[in-house]
Amino acid sequence: MSEILTLNNIECQYDGHLAVSGLSMHVNAGEIVCLLGPSGCGKTTVLRSIAGFHPLSGGDILINGTTVSQPGFTLPPEKRRLGMVFQDHALFPHLRVSGNVGFGLRGITQAQKDVIVNEILEIVGLSGMDERYPHELSGGQQQRVALARALAPKPDLILLDEPFSNLDVELRERLSDEVREILKRHGTTAVLVTHDQHEAFALGDAVGVMHEGKLLQWDTPYNLYHVPSNRFIADFIGQGVFLRGTLLTSETVETEIGVHKGKLAYGWGRGTRVEVLLRPDDIVPDPASLLQAEVIKKAFRGAEILYTLRLPSGGRVLALFPSHADHHIGERVGIRVQADHLVAFPLSENRPIPPSPFS
Image (cartoon, rainbow, N blue to C red; front, side, top):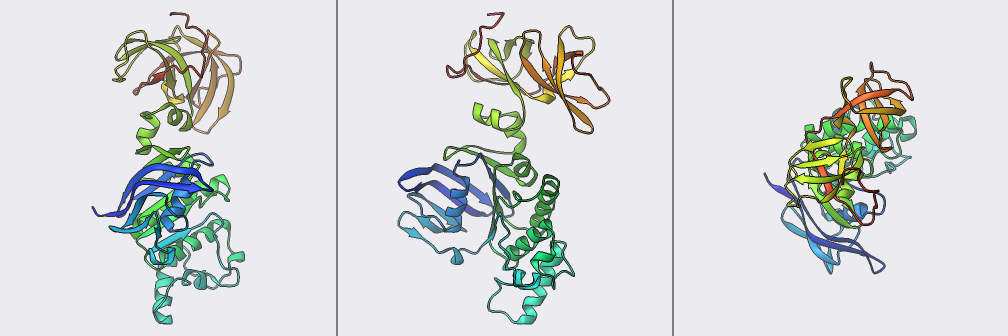
């Protein structure tokens, strides 16, 4: 599989301050990848650097094997064969849909342009809307016009900068699925930056989590959720709580709600104090269990209910139960841990936890 985009140990600065440091990644033809992280983590700076809007102070960027950025050299954006989809759509209000989509098409006849525009509009599900103006479209339709405009010149790579952040939640989720299908059907290589993990997971073949200008883990959505490489990612991705624990063996840890086994393989010694991550789907109902927890909060989610449960020790866990198991606030329920992936990290001095009752 050919490599479309390569970033080698890039470094970016703003006003003398390091915004991105030591970041390397590559994207193969036809892949959709996402850079995910909180505001200020450097993800948009990386995207701007790929686009040619921000210079590098270290490392280099290659597109199709050709260097487009390195310290002292930045190939202009218009020469990079890129498409861009922005947060605010950036459509031209005075142009119809057809004019917006065909804006970047150069050196061809009007008849050829019309054919391409109609083909792209069909791909994005907007056939028959070519004569409308942007203000006559919904937010989701405007975003698809922006995507069509980016696709029309057949770029080597499309960059999407928080493309759904101005849309409501339901539309954002639906468009994420639609955009992925469109990009895959068109065979387009794409890089998305977002702070929304649901967006990243819905779109990305691979996702890179960024924090303070560094790429912490580049992986599949599944591994980021179940096998996070550090505590920040474990905390940032999904929901869950950390319980104090003590390592009994290399694959066994004791917590306030029992002894749990899993492949840790970190080389820590017996007696190491750790924090064990428990996701809501790790806690399952078990009426016969001796471990009883009190329901203190509940959130109905259709097929499931997310419960916040108080343990006998006073600690709390989250649990997802089928929605027909409708428990009341204050009710005590039997639970057990069913964790296929045991995730634990050494107890940090910066996060003091009271002494364990079994230590």
